[in-house]
Image (cartoon, rainbow, N blue to C red; front, top):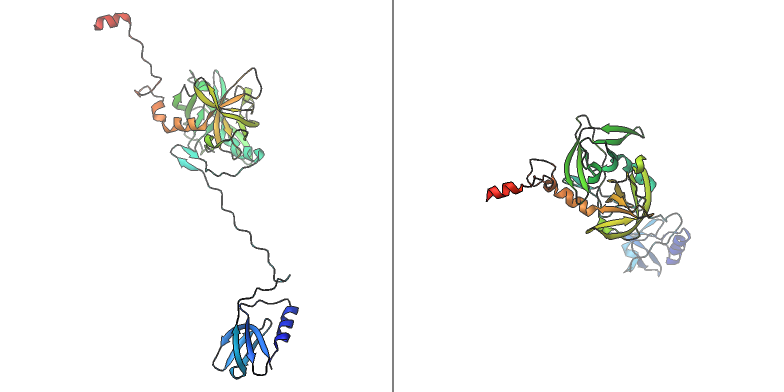
Length: 330
């Protein structure tokens, strides 16, 4: 039994099917034809798929085989499928560069609420007998950054860290603090928590202050007036504010005494600056040291090493010779 072209096509269209890899037509001796997809050509027969069944047609009944271009399957509700979503690549993890972690260039933007909960553990309070400031931890070993003026002239330094314990923050005070390096002129200090039983510390990554744009949203975490873990948000007013020969980031995020040494973040949670001062007779005039200066300080910390045995220490000043000694030297 052979199917005419009209019969085969009408049955296929009625079923909503034409999943044919190719449209091949078999011209038969009696003037009829069969259209479908040839599955196999044997010496004595040809097997052709007409969409809903496969027919075996003897070679003796076939006059000619016409091969044409491929057909597109008719769309049906039963055969239509929603394309699978392409898997998104996982966010790139920060890479450690010697002492600190460098944030990836394409960090995803997140809400301040989510960032604060994940970054707060790495922001610390730095206490001295003369007052307090803020700071942030650079790596799991307890190296941290703060302002030089927070520890200037102090010999007793303690650091309060808020460890995450069972979804709650637990305050822990560390008193074995070592000054690793200082730079008075850049107002930066590198400290190290040296207690034996100290755990691995949560840390935050340094971003790129050069990539910031004026008007971009930023936020700060610190302890203004002793109010620990205070979050203030604003925008970047300018990133090239010149003051006393140095360039600072200017921001509308509120900066007050106690914020000194704390981090200024972009909306990806990367540190872009270290807050250190404000104009007291104005509002929304806070300033931060660009993170590029922080990286320079860390990369060249040996030159700023806090050690009396280091002849390169810029803060190891000798007493000037008296006039009498100069005369005797002659």
